[in-house]
View (tube, one colour):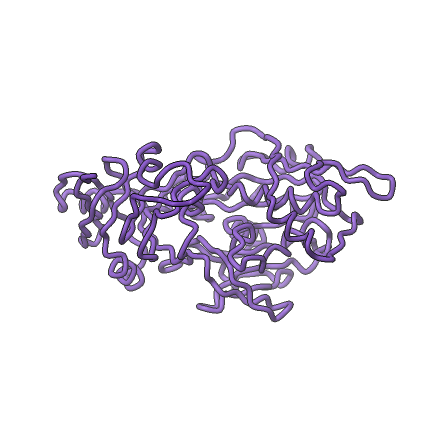
Length: 398
C-alpha cells in the first residue's frame, strides 16, 4: 500500500520526515515520548494523552493490532502518533483491526519511519516542545510557524472537554484480578469495607473502574455478583463515575464510602475550582488520588506543582515504597509533579521515583487519604501496585 509523505515540525525549527499511515490531515500538540515495549493500545486510548503527540521508543509498533478488550476510552484524544517502523500486518487472536485502520477511523494523524531515537534525545535535551504532525505535501517552514503559534498544554482546558457530563454507574470488572486472588490465600474482611465509591472523572482510564469494582467484589462466593453477604449484612458494590465539576456537597449527597480522584491531562494549576471542592472533602471520606488526582490532592493540601522537563511515560519506572522498602515497577504518564518542599507537615511522601527522586506517592498522617503518581491499574509489575486498591477498599489506610 502506498502512503503519503509526512512531517513532524517542532516549534524550535527541527523537522522530521516520515510516512503517513493514519489520517491524512494535520494536528498540533505537545510531543512526548513513551518507553513502553508494548501496550500501545492502552497508550493511544488513554485520555491523559489529550493535547499530546506521542512518540514510541520501541522500534516496531502495530504487530498485535487493536482488540475490543484493552480500550481505556472509547473516544481517544491523542493528537498524533510517531513510530520508527509500522507493521501493516498484525497477528493476535483478539485483534479486530489494524493500527492504521484505527487511526483513520478516529481521524488521528500518524507517521512511521521517524527517527524516534534522535527525536527522543532532542526532547530530553530541550524539553517538551509544541509541534505539528501532518500528512501530505506541506511547507515545513509554515508548519514550524503553526507549531509556534499553537497553545501550550498549560493553556488548554482539557479536563472540561473530557469529563462525563452526568453521573453513571460502572459495571464492568477485571477478570485477571479475580483470577490473581483466587490463586492466593489472601482473605478480605468486610470490616471498614468501602462499598460505594465515587470516581471523579478527569479523563479516567477504564481499567481504574474495572480494578476498583473487581477488588470490591473480593471475598464474594461469586466474583461476578455485585452483592456480598457477610455477618448477615448485605454489601452492594457500586462504582459511580461523576463529572469533574461536581461540587463537594453534591458528591456527599450521594453518600459515598470513599472517593477516587482520577488521572487526566493538563496542568493541575488550571483546576483551582476543582481543588477548592477537594478541600471540602478532606476529612469527610477516605480519598485515593491517581496521577492528576495526586497533584490536585496535593494542591488541596496547600502544596505546589511544577512541570517536568520531559516527564515520565512508560511501563518500566522504578518506584521505592518508603514504608515497605520494596521497589515497584510501575506504569506512568505525567508531565507535572508535586514539589515535596511545599507539602504541609501533615502529609508525608510515601513513594519516590528511583530515576530522579521525584514524588510518586503521598499519605496524610491524620486522615485516610493517600495517592500515587503512577498507574496501579496498568499492572506493569505486573502485580506490584494492585495492593493500593486493596488498601483503599479494605481499610488498611484507615
